Image: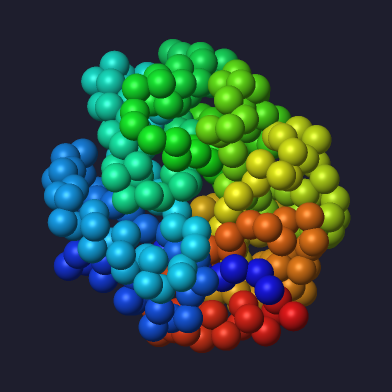
Length: 281
């Protein structure tokens, strides 16, 4: 059986995310360890860390995945943004170590017009490399594919492979594959098939054994739309058959499948979980 979960709120206290996850029937979850919309982060008190780790242990939920906040941009052209990004990435790895979180997902950012794509790639490699060398613990950074919007780093599988190869740290660098982002970037899982697209990822980004997390999202836009808009499972362009094919593809069955589906009146998280369970059969 594949492990299914959601990105879950930490509102009130980190450990409350675990009870929320249990209520949703999660096997695995993703969280932010801080507010994702501001640079500043309150340090994690030992009592808070212990409460979180104890709640995780009691629940049996595994793995726990952290996601970088929204503001950092590891390809940033502006020196102040880049400096704050490197600090935040380093700090977030240490926070993961405090909470015994094995994976930290990060987007690879957007480069500036003066830097260009290659310089953007170099900055991402330097930022992640510094963070790995100057943080506590052994948390693995997972490079996430993007919808390949303008000036983005990580919008192609080849791009992700260049970053991974540049870091040359297989024990600390893995991958997160977002199904919505892949389709929006032009990778047609519905037309070419799931096995074909993941074969391209294996050849261009890196071995599927390094793929640890699947962001399981349907998509509001079409293939190649570059629209990063998630949809409820089966209600978007990918549809139920493609979602089923992802969930049952044996070469990625070791991954944690985490939904980042909308919070609206169309369908609840519990209903999305029920759809995911059904499509995973």
